[in-house]
Length: 294
Length: 293
Image (cartoon, rainbow over all chains, first blue to last red; front, side, top):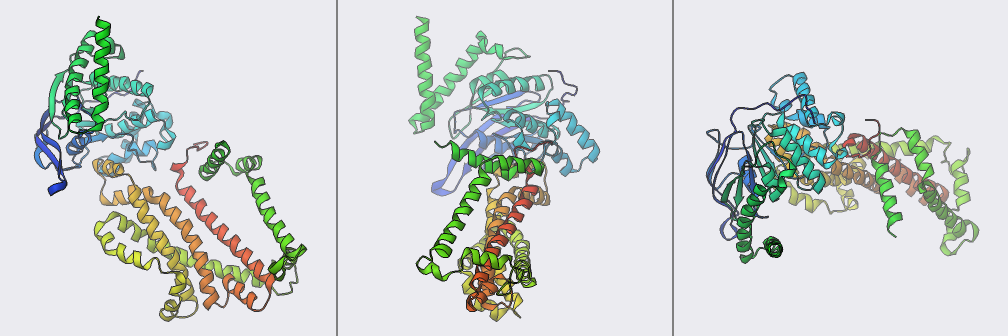
C-alpha cells in the first residue's frame, strides 16, 4: 500500500521505569500488582511487553500513561517524572475508545482542538492527512459504530498520531479482532512504523504478535509482576508474516515460551486457574514435538 | 424457532435508529412488513370484544358501560348529547389545558433533573449528600404529595403542575445518574490523555455519553407526568382531561368519560413519540444504518 503522507519522527520518547511498585487496597485487602519493576523503553524502538494473563499488564500501561500513580518508584519520560496523563504518551486501548458520538474526523481532530495548539483549519487538514494515511478517507464522516473493528483501530491510531506523542502505548490493541484481521493489522502496523523512528510500547498476550513486532521483548513474571527476562529480537527489518516460519523465529519463540511456561507453572501452583491453560498447552506442545523428533 | 422474534426485534431496532431514511421509503417498508397488520388486528380484537361485551350481549356488569357504537357516535357527532366531541371547543380546551400542564411540568423536571443527575454521577461528594434523601423521597407515591402540594403552592394551577413535575423529576434524575455511571471509564481516560478540560469532559463526554439513558428517563418521565397529572386534576382541577374523566363519571355522562379516557391514551402516546423522535435526532451516532451520509 502506498501512502502520500508518512509519519514524521518526534523528539524524545525514552521511558524509564525505576523500581515501580503498585499496590491496590489497604490493610488486609491489599494486593500488589506490580513489584519493583525496572525497565527501559528505548527511543525510536518497538518494545513489546508480554506476560501471562492477569499478571498486571494493563496496570503497567495505566501507570506509564499516568492514570495510576505508582505506590513507590517512578516513571521517567525523557528525564522528567510522569505525574499524570498527557498527550505526550497516548494510549491505544483494548477494544476501542473512540468517542462513539463523534465522527471519525471529529475523533481525530479532538485532541489538538481542545489543546488549542493551532488553527482549526490546520488541524482539519492534518486530520484529513492522517485519516488518509490510515486508509479511512471515505469514512471520515462516519461514526465509529459504522466502522469495522480493524477500521476502528486504525482511526484510533490516527487520533493518537495527530498529537505527535513521544511514546505510543498500545494496550493489546488488536484484542477482539478475528485472527485474519489481526494479522492484517500487525502487518499494517509494521509498514506504518518501521523506519519512522517512533517509540512504541506494545502490550500483548500473543507470542507470535510479540516477536513479529518487537525490537526488544520484555517477558513479565506472574503477579506481582516485574520483568523476568529481556529478549532482543534480532530478526531483520522490514518484517513480514513469512518470518513466522524462520528458524531464528522458532528459537526466539521457544526461549520466550519456556520463560512464560515457568511463570505459568508457579502461578498455577499459587492457585491461578488462568495459568492452567498455558501449562497444559505447553506440555502438549512439548509432547508433540518429542514425537516428531523421533 | 426463535427467528420470528429475532426478526421483530431487529426490525424494531432498525426502526428506532433509521432516522435518515426519507419518510416515504420508511412508510413503504412499514406497509410491506407484517407489523401494521398485526397492530391493526390487535386493536380490532379489542374493539370487537368491546362491541360484543357491551353493545351486543350486555354481559353481566359490562351492560352498565357505554357501548362502542354509542361512544363513537358521541365522539363524531356535531351536536353531542353531553357537549363534548371532536367538533366542540370544550374538547380541545381540555386537551390544551392538560398538554400545557404536562409540558410545563416536564420541561421544569428535565431542566432541574438533568443537571442534578449529572452532578450526582460526576461528583462523589454531591452524590453522597443527595442520594440518601432522594431514595427516601422517591418512593412516596404522587397521591400522597397532594395535600402537601395544596398547602404549599398557591392557587389551583401551580399545585397541579407541581405534582406532575415531581413524578418526572425523580425519574429524570435517576436515569441521568445511571447514564453518567454507564459511561465506560476508557472514554474518561482517553479524554484526559488528549488534554480535555473539565468543561470539555462535561460537554463532550458526559452529556453525549449519558444521553441514551437520559432519553429513556425522558420517555418514562413523560408517562409519569400524564399519570400524576390525572391524579392531580381529579382532586383539584377545574379543567383538563383528568378533571373531565371524573366530572363525566359524576354526572353519569359515560360515553364522554370513555372518549376522554381514549384521548388521554392518545395524548400520552403522542407525547412519548415526540420525545423519542427528538432523542433519535440527537443520537444519530447510535444508528448503524445511516443512508446517504
